[in-house]
Amino acid sequence: MPRVIHFEICADDPDRAVEFYTEALGWKISKWEGPMEYWLIRTGEEEGEPGIDGAITGREDDWTTINTISVPSLDEYRQKVEKAGGKVVSPKQTVPGVGYHCYCLDTEGNVFGILEEDLSAQ
Image (cartoon, rainbow, N blue to C red; front, side):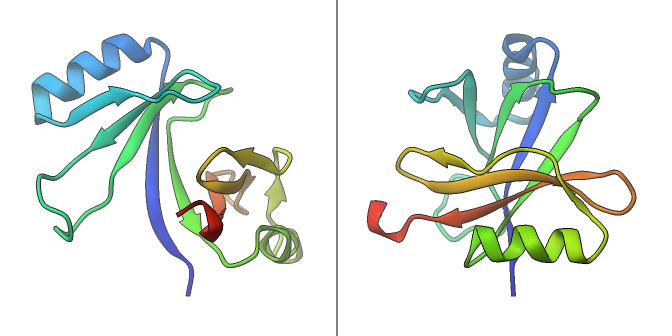
C-alpha cells in the first residue's frame, strides 16, 4: 500500500522558513545540491525513529504543505489518480538519484506528490 514518505513546506521566503524551523523545532536543514532551490529537512536524530523527513521549497501557486507518497509505478498511479477523479498537475519529472515524481490534486483540491523510487540509484 502506498505510504507518505516525504513532506514539503512551501514558502514565500525559503531562507526565512529555514531559520524559523531550525530555531523553533531544532530541525537539521541543509541545502540540496540538485538542479533546483530545495532545502532538505531531517526531523529526527535516530535512523528508524518514527516520523518522516521533508524539505522546504518555494511556493507554487497557493500550495502550502505537500505530502509525497511512494508508489511502485508513477505511470500506473497517475492513471489511477485521474480515474478516481483527481488531476495530475505536473509532468513526470526525473529527480536525479531519487526517482520519478509528479504533483497531483485530489477531489478536494489538495495537492500531493507521487514518487516512484529509482531502486538502481540506491
